[in-house]
Amino acid sequence: MDFLLYLTPIGNEIINKIISNNYIIRENAPVCRNKEIFGFLESREFTICTDNIKNRISSVEYYINETVYHEAVHVVHTCKMGPIEISDLSLDQSKLNDVNKSSNLTKQNKIYELEAYYLEDKPNLVNQYLKKYCL
Image 1 (cartoon, helix red, strand yellow):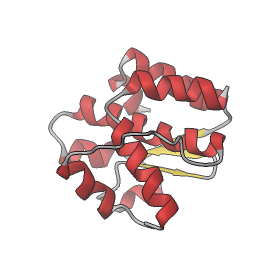
Image 2: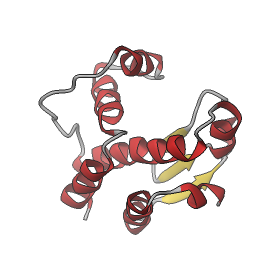
Image 3: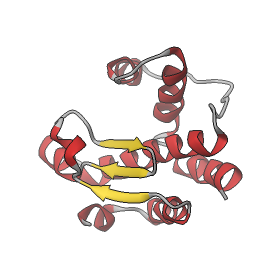
């Protein structure tokens, strides 16, 4: 799996926690044929679309790690069986636009996406939430 070569130490720790929670890690799975997708979580499958990231973004290492952190937040949602309930979810306009582009935006899914976009650049917090809710 190529994406593992790009992970930061905390990214590796997060992936190991996800694996220990019986998730299957997939890279460039069929869902990645949608070139807009960088990562995807469905059921117990955690997918990273490395080729999509490499083909669209110049800072591959940054975006692979950001995608791992983002999808790991959705693992936390699954473990907690609901939103994390972060009190201040202030996002810049760019991230708000990304939330609105996400598919399946029911009211509940919007909260999940808001939290994931808020935390995707806060790997230490993501790791803490994984420890709290998934281990």
